[in-house]
Image (cartoon, rainbow, N blue to C red):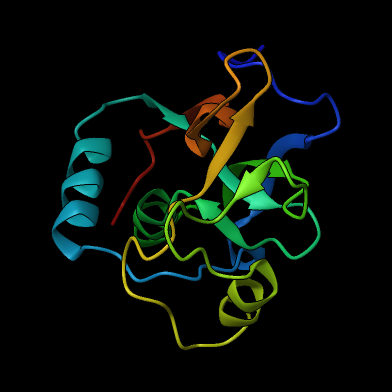
Length: 150
């Protein structure tokens, strides 16, 4: 199912969640978000988007902050999410000076976000024995764009 070989129990589910349940921990680049909003709106009926990767317990956004903020601005109530076991040792928060996961979750529950791209989450691929971008755990979703009014 994924383009990398991961532990079977790492992904806990893939589903639509209420956007207000998710907890971002990083700021975003406004220009990147605005471009994504414009791009999604340019599709008449639907758009295929990568799911947002989140901790299955805290709903901390691990990957997909720009997607989250773009979909929120567009008025989406439910968003596609891949839930993972964030505390697995197969997930890391950065190569150099990684932040502790408990600290990142604490930030996600507060209103004080970290700078954009201050974490570099990756997942360990069992086959290659290398760390890979965590977005590879995302699933593709079709979202309806014909009713976007914003």
